[in-house]
Image (cartoon, rainbow, N blue to C red; front, side, top):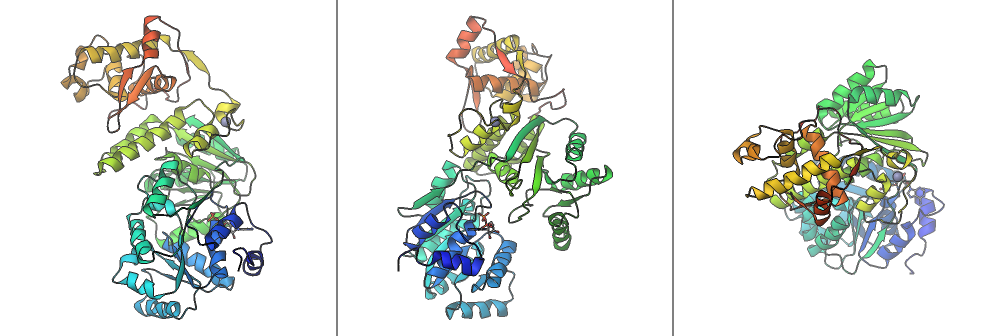
Length: 523
Ligand code: ADP
Ligand code: ZN
C-alpha cells in the first residue's frame, strides 16, 4: 500500500471534509511511511487529524498521549460519533470500566487509545502496553515534555520509558507552540530518529496587537469592550480572585460577563463556559485555565489585564481571538509592577536552571511589551520566524509610532551611575538596583553596599525607580548598556555607551510605558 492510499476517502468518510488543510497530508504521509514526525502547527490548524486519520489507514493501535483528561473524553466522543473505534484510559474510570476497556484494546477492537501521561507508570502498565499491537505513538501538546516551555508537565517525561518499551514504533509529536529551544528539547526528550519536521507559520494576519500602559485598568477595559458593540471576547487575568473581580466590575458596568478559573466547581465552570460559547454572555474573565480545547471561532478580542508570564502564553492566549479569520484585537495592559509580582513567585522555584529560564522568559515578555518595534516581528521572531522585516502595519507600533523624547540627560545619569558603582568596587549591579540608586531608594541592599554614598545617589529623583528601569532597558536595547548574566543579570557600559558619555551625544528614546509613580519597584 502506498502511504497516502485512501487518505482522502477516509477524510470524507469519517470527518466529512473534502480536502486537507495545509501540511496535513504531508504530515500524515511521513507518519504512514514510518518516520518519526514533529508537527508544529498553530491552534486550529487541525493537528488531531494528523494522527487520527493515519490510525485508520494502518493496522493496529495508535496510542495517543494527551495532557487534559477533559479534552480526552471530548475527542473520543467525537471520534465515536464519526464511527471511529476509540477509547481512553485515565484516573476517572472505575476499576471495572478500566478492565473492560483493557479487554477491548487487547481484542484489537480499538484504533485509537488516549492515555493520560501519569497512567503510563502505574503498576506494570508498560508491559501491558507491550502486549497490544501498538503501531504508532502520538504525543499531543508535545511542548509539555520540555521544562523550557510554558506548560511543562513532569509526567510527560515518562514518555521516554514508553518509547523505550516500544523501540520500533514510530512517534508523531504535535504542538501549537514551541520556541526553537523547546523544539530541540522535544526532539531530544522523545529521542526522535531522523525526524520529519513540519513547521507552519505562526503568523495570525487577522490579529491586531496593541500594548498600552496599565493605568486604571478596569475603566480602560470597560471602555474598550463598550466600544466593541456586541462583540464577544476574553479578558485574561493573573489570578482567580482578579478574574472574579473583573467579571463583577464588567457586570456592574452593564457588560454581561462570567468568570472562569480552575478554582470553580466543575458544574459552574462548565456552565460559564457554555454561556460564553452560546453567546449568552459577551465576555469571560479568566485565568490561563481557560482556553485549551475551546473552539469559539468569533472571539473578537482578547484583553490581557495583567502581564502573561511569557511570550508563548501570550501568543497562545491571543491566538484564541479571530479563529474565523476575521479581524480581531489583542490588547495587553502592561505595568512594570506585574513583572515584579511575577518575579516574586519565580523566586520560590528551587531548581536554579528552571528559575533562571523562567526569569529570562519573563524579561523577554516585558521586552516585547516595552518595545517600540513592530509587535508581529517581535512575536514571530521569538518563534524563529524572520520573514517580515518592514513591520506589519497592524500593530500599535506600526500604526502609531511611539512619540519620542530627549533622554540625553537621563542617559548621562544612568551611564555615569554604572561607572560610579564600578569604581566603588564590589560586585556589579542589575538594572533595578541601578534604578534604586538613581531614585534615591533607602532599600537595604542600597544601604548595605553604601550605594547611598555614591555621587550619583538620588540624582534622578525626578523619576520613579520604575521609570529609570524602563529607561535603562531602552538604553540596553539600543546597545549603550550591556546586560549580561543568567541568575542575576548585571549592567555595564558598552563601547557605544562610553562614546555617548564622552561626546555628550543627544539620546532620543521612545515614550515610556511606565505611567505616573504608581509602579515603584521594590525588589
Ligand atoms: P488543533 O489541534 O490544531 O488546534 P484541531 O485538530 O482541534 O486543531 O482542529 C480544529 C478544527 O478544524 C476541528 O473542528 C477539525 O475538525 C477541523 N479540521 C481539521 N482538519 C480539517 C480539514 N481538513 N478540513 C476542514 N476542517 C478540518
Ligand atoms: Zn507591526
